[in-house]
Image (cartoon, rainbow, N blue to C red):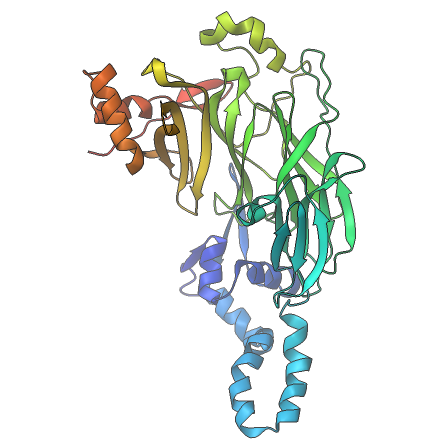
Length: 438
């Protein structure tokens, strides 16, 4: 190969070199044999390709044939100038309409708790019911679209509510509204002899792809009366292939992203852990997740609360297969304004940045309450890059420090909170170090 060393590392680098979507790259690999390599390693399969191998493969396969749909669109202006209008219309019907996805779900509207699914032209396709009013800003939370088979239009995975059964379901709709399957979840574990078979409410639902380009459906379920949350993984046939139990509340955020660049998605989540006295957490799971979140015991600093926390220890302890699990320990600073639940929210995640919001305090005033805290910025391997104060919170924190902690300035406060981050490794908590801005 001569210059075979010109390597493209990661699926997005390969997609960028080919000037196409990641999904098409996977499709070419699976259906047409695009030369992509994987190396087994601790974090999974590292995906890469050589430019010259790809260039040679394109020559052998005739890239113009592979990009047929794109070529038709490029040729259309030329055809307009030389062909009759009737023939152009025929070409449009034959070549463009079947592949544009206009027949499948693309847009949505709401009327109370009734959600209307529409195609790309805005034509109504079908309706389904969700419990309670739904706002357009919530659409990205309760369902996701994706083309998971060989027909052009999208399928739809959605959180639905059955009024008769009074239960939530994850429902897979075909592009025409036909229900392919619907599933609910129950807990396979007990906690302090308590069973949780009902009252699980689903919110996010996401399509995800493995390193082998298999499609899975990820959903999150919260047990309303108690503490338990479940992240479930189903295959496209509706079979449950993974179930991860988290002893605390998980917020509505549920991310699906290829964090380690191996060509397959991981699950990223945030929330609180009741066994840690409602401390904030962030975690990453493989798609086929299983087991129970750490820790599996009452931490020494919370031994005085053992009588209250014992309900959150599973009767049959099965260690979870989380790839990353991080806690944000509580501190005694500014106790008058301390929030009893130190919640975390995933605010941004890309290939090179994961940003988590932490809110240790609640500032009450005549106009209402304001959550105050920090943003933690992690790199993909979850090294802590920086801790910053969001601009609206700076004034609140400076005023509080003047009144209650005169010996601590804002930079010192940030430094303290950069040292409360711990990662679960080998059944123990290991400090995660970070930096604060000057």
